[in-house]
Length: 71
Image (cartoon, rainbow, N blue to C red):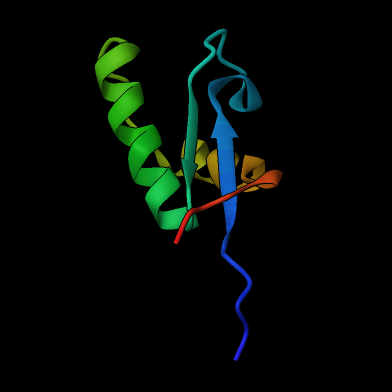
């Protein structure tokens, strides 16, 4: 049984070409996608995530080399 903590994943608005410093962090791509949907809707004038934007977000997701989640 592994005791390694899950590695955090991150995605930023900058990573998808927006001039915004927002960064979503989470354990799963699905969770990050939902955070980005909410942020884009609330902070970027009701922007919706169309399939093209969803692909950009998924490609931009990175493992955070330093961040790990607490138990």
